[in-house]
View 1: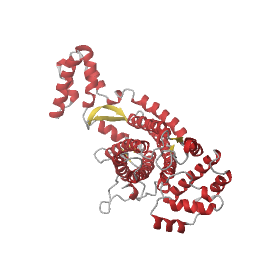
View 2 (view 1 turned 45 degrees about the vertical axis):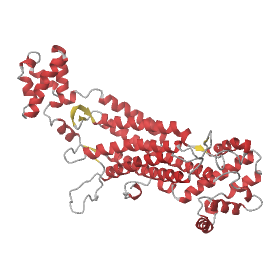
View 3 (view 1 turned 180 degrees about the vertical axis):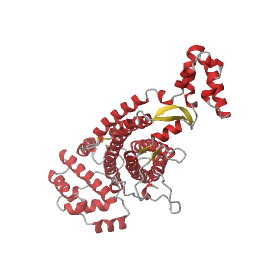
Length: 453
C-alpha cells in the first residue's frame, strides 16, 4: 500500500502524510470552532469577547495532550475531549460558549475539508512541477521519431514529443476538473445535530454562511450530515488522475523494458536493482506509481459505499469516507512526487527509437504507400495491393520495399525512387512536432499558474 512505499532519497516527501496526522486534523477542527465563534459573535449569538477568547487560545500547542488522551480513552468520542480542553483553556466566563449549537460532524467534516484543501494545494503544485518537466520533454522529443503503436503493434510513425503532448493534454484537464469542483468539494457544514438548524433557529443559515466566510468555503445549501457526494466526487477525481498517472508510468515501464530500451527513468549511481542480479536497472519509481495508483482507484467503491447513509447521519459511513479520503490523498502525494521525479530525470534514447522504428523493414509505412498509390488507382484497390505486399513481407520474411518494387500493379504508377522515399518513416510523422510544441506551451502556462514564486 502507498503508506508503506519506501522513501527514495531522490524523491521528496510532499507532506500529505503530515496533513493527515491527528494533530493537524485537530488543529483544523479547532480552526472551525474559531470560525463558528466568530460567525456567531457577528450575529450577536455569543459575546464578541467570547469569540476573541476562543480564537486566542484555539491552538493545539497550547493544549494538554494528556488530558485530551485521557478524555478520549474514557469517552470514546471523536471530538468531545478536544472541546472540553478548548473550553478549559478559554476559561470563565467565556469557555461555555465553545461549540455553541454545533454537532460533532459539523466540526470534524468541515475541518477535514480544510485538510483536504491543504492537500489539493500540494497536488496542484506537484502537477504544475510535473507539467513544467513535461514541457521540456515535449520540446526535446518534438522531432524525435518513434514507432506509433496501436494494439501493441507498429501502426504509423510518431514522435516522442507527441506522446508527451497526450500526457500534458490529459493532465491539464485534471487541473481544470479540480478547479471546477472546488466550490462543490470545499464546503462548510453547520446545521446542528441533524442538519435542521434547530439549535440555531432562523439564524442558522447565516451562522453557516459566516463559518464559510471565515474559512474561505461555500456554505452548504442543505447542511445534512447524510450528504457525501461532494466527498465522493473528490475521490472520483483523484481516481481519474491516478488512472492517468498510472497509464504514464506503465508506458514508461514498458518502453524501459530491455526489448524496447527507448527510455529510462532516473537510476542514480549506486541504485541496486536486485540482491542477486547486479545488472538490473529496475523501473522502481514507475512501479511505485502503478501500485499507488491502484490503491487510489480502489478507494472509489469505498467512497460510493459511504454515500449510502441511513437516515440523517450514520457514523459507519463517515468512518468509511474518512479512511478513503486519507488513503487516496496520501497515495496521490506519493504518485505525483514520483511522477515529477521521473519526468525531470527521464532519459531518452533516440537511436534505439529509430532502430525499433525500422524493425518492420518499412512495413510501418504501409499507410503512406497506400494513400499515395490510391491517388492513382483508388484507395480500396491500393489497400488490396499494399495489403498483399505487407502480409507477404511479414509472413515470408521478405523485404516490403522489394515486394512493392517488383509488383507491376505498383510499378505501373511509381518509380523505384518514389517507393523508397515513401518508406522513410521520418517523413511521415504528420503534425506531431507542432502538437508537441503547442502542448509544451500550454504546460508551461499552467505550471506558472500552479507553482508558487
